[in-house]
Length: 260
Image (tube, rainbow, N blue to C red; front, side, top):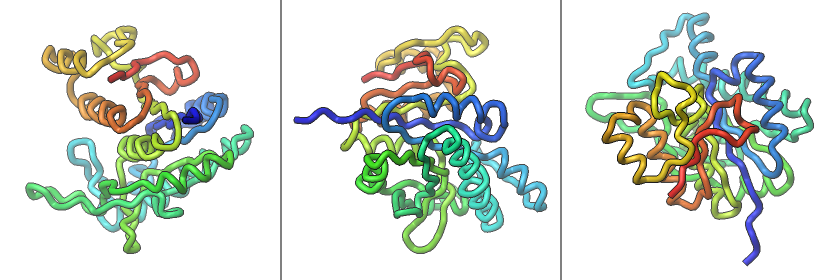
């Protein structure tokens, strides 16, 4: 059986791609990554800023944005337009043949609108149902680098706001059938920390057993728990490795490596 070619799927938060200094550094580091690659980005701060200028209230629940009809227009403009095309233009300037995509483009990611649950209505928010890995894979095989905005569609003409971590995870899982995939989540810390007050206390390798023990001890808590659960799910679905690191350490290979 022929060996699969390597592919790196990198997810970066909005904070990194919205500030000029960190964006330039990220683009330099991303351009330097060898082989096939995909970039998935957020953009929440820019969306909130534009919404405020337009007199539209931003409402959050458990860290997730409530997306009503007005806010959907804002996130579509910001994520699919402003933030996405800034990244694409920056990568082109660095010799990377990038293509900006939402899930609606080429029908690469289809979602369903999240149902109202326990009285909570997130509005026009999508839960991913399918990723067309074959179409994405055909672009990648041509040397094109997809830059994916956190927007999907339902196949019935509606754009849906979709969590960027989820898009990265589902895209990596879909492409694992075609490539040897490494999934990298970039956030503000250097990795998963033993002590949240000590930025140098990075846990270098994390197995499912370690994870359960750290959660029981209270070392790993809050928003890191679902991020790690998603990471283990990606490994079970065929992704080769998952790394959690800071964007500034992207090219260094440091951070926390998640293993089965």
